[in-house]
Image (cartoon, rainbow, N blue to C red; front, side):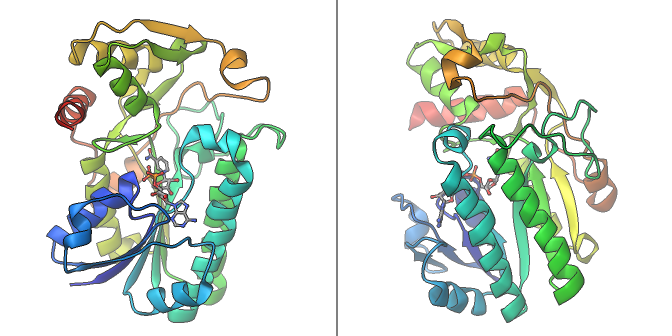
Length: 314
Ligand SMILES: NC(=O)c1ccc[n+]([C@@H]2O[C@H](COP(=O)([O-])OP(=O)(O)OC[C@H]3O[C@@H](n4cnc5c(N)ncnc54)[C@H](O)[C@@H]3O)[C@@H](O)[C@H]2O)c1
């Protein structure tokens, strides 16, 4: 039994992973600015602190000090907010993360950090492997503040393991989805499909992504945190099956038996003139397969059915 400190525990990934870790007999201390009514709060092995990781450093220090392992998930992870709140993205994903890493060094705790497939930016080399280049647009394009903040933290973790003996693990996540996801492409499409409202795609919807069901991601996380081989390593975590956003929209309409129409908006209409997109995003998961034998098991049709069924019953 371990005691995990989870930042962003009320978020989509945090909530699912916390439930899974509790089921596996662990204890959790969770922190989040958000509080949602959930059975987690009634679990005697779950302690919740409703605060920001940007404030109250002495409380953070105390919580990290009394845990065995830090799972640092808190972030602004909703793409719309990279554009509307870029400073907050940088404050949380970069500056608050640095403080948390310093506290892990002080208390000699291991840290697990959720990075992102956005790290690779517009690189045209498909699939993306962990040591591939990062091709980003200019700093005037707000979107890249998220990728750059996460990359700064990856650099900082590498540097602290080198200079301060910090033990870390990083995962770069490729579009994780499932029940309770909010404000991402899959959750928006499903909500609209169930209400027979239009599904909006951008610029024709030919951009491709690889969607990874939450249970597969959690299996990967558990293998990574438990294994000494994964110490100080960075892993892509994603399903390798690629689909265009247009095809995703059609699939969701079909699986949910919806009457929704699919409408396209130009980037200019949707985001104004300060936007760039990533045309294709596909992970190589060879590294995690070689290290731990992991690859995603739940295909998109099955994952969507589970997510849609959950949305219907809630
Ligand atoms: N879901 C994905 O597809 C995906 C893809 C790439 C990376 N990630 C990363 O995985 C992590 C979890 O993502 P998610 O999908 O669960 O996002 P989420 O938005 O559902 O959860 C993030 C949580 O962090 C909390 N948070 C934000 N600022 C905070 C603060 N100052 N103090 C305390 N809590 C704060 C939010 O309230 C939220 O509950 C994030 O680091 C994200 O960048 C997720």
